[in-house]
Amino acid sequence: MKLGFVINDIATERNDYTTIRLARVAANRGHSVALIGLAGFIYDSDGSVRAHAHVPRSDSYQDDDALLAELQGEDAQAQRICVDELDVLMLRSDPADEVNERPWAPNSGLLFAQLAALKHVIVLNDPTHLTDASNKTYFQHFPEEVRPVTCISRDPDEIKAFIAEHDGHGVIKPLQGSGGQGVFVVTPESDANLNQMIDAVIRDGYAIVQEYLPGASKGDLRLLTLNGRPLQVDGQYACFRRYNDSGDARSNIKAGGKIEMAAPDEDALRLAEIVAPKLIRDGMYLAGLDIVGDKLMEINVDTPGGINMAEELTGVDFSSHVVADLERKVRLRDQYNRTLSNVELAMM
Image 1 (cartoon, one colour):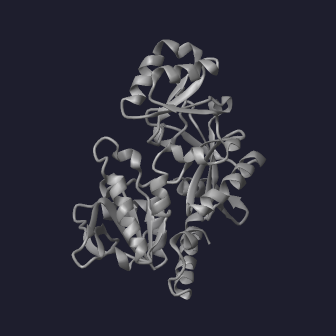
Image 2: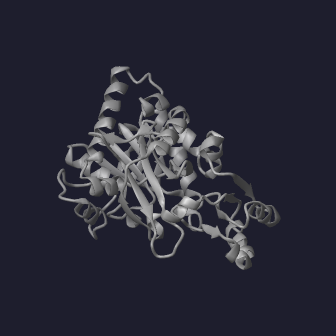
Image 3: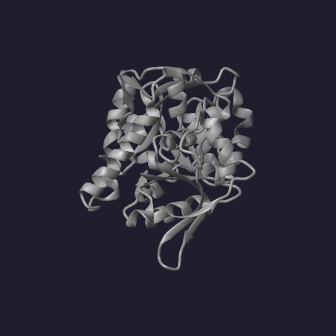
C-alpha cells in the first residue's frame, strides 16, 4: 500500500502526534509512506498531482522518536512523488496552526486532495465534506440534542446578551481554531474582563459562544471514532479523559492538559450513536468526539489526535487496527474496479 499523510510542515511535527504513530506503524508493516507538507503540492503540466514529500528510508523503526529524527534530520531531503499513484491520502494538517502565517494553506491542501480523489486515491477524511467542515459551524448541523446552547456572532452586544441570559457564565472561542487557542471561560467574577475577551476573539472573525457545562471543570472525554463508530479493539475503546489541574479551564493537551484512562459511559456512547449517521454520510473516517456529561463540546474532523495516548494508557495497538482497516479499503476499491465513490470507501 502507498500511503500519504498531509501535514502542516515536517518541521512542526512532534513525536506525540497521531500522524507520526500511524506513519511508523504503516512503515513497519511494509507499506510505502510519504509525508506531504501543505506547501508541497504541485499540479503538473500533464494534469497529474505531484508533491515534494518526506519519505522514510527504513522499513523498521523502534519508536516514533526514531522515525521523526530521520524525517527532521539535517540530511533529510524531500522527494518528488506522484500523489495520483497513492492508494490512500490521509489529511492530517491542523488549520488552526495556519490562521496567522499561512491562511491560504488549509484550503489549498483540500483542493489538491479533491483532485487526488478524482484519480481514485482514497482520501480520508473526505476532502469535499471536510471543506464544508472547515470551521465550527459544521457542529451546528448535528442534532440539537447533542450540542450546548450556542450563539455565533461578531456583535459584542449579542455576545454579552447571551452571557447574561446564562447568568454570567459561558465559553467564548474563535469560530475557526482548535487546541484551546483563544478560548475564554466567562464567569460572573470575570465580568470586568469580558470586553477584552470578546475583542480578543472577534478581531480575527466570528466568535462562537456556548453555554458553560459545569462538568467541564473536571475535564472532558475524548472518544475516537473510526468509520463513524467508536474505535474499539478487543473490547477496549480508544477513549481517555483530558483534564487540567493547573487552574487553566482548558483541558486540551496543547494547552497543558493531562490525560487519564477512561471508558465511555452510557451518555458518551449515546452521543456517538446520534452523530454517527452524519459522520458516515460526510465520509468522516476518523473523528474525535469531545464530551462533557451528556453533551458534545466539539467534533474534531480535521486532525483528530489521541491514538498514541490511548495506546499508552491501555496497551492496545489501535494504530495497527487503523492501518489494517486502510488495507481493507484498498482491497475493496480494487475488487470493485475503482467504481466506489470516495465517501463510500471512506466509511465502509
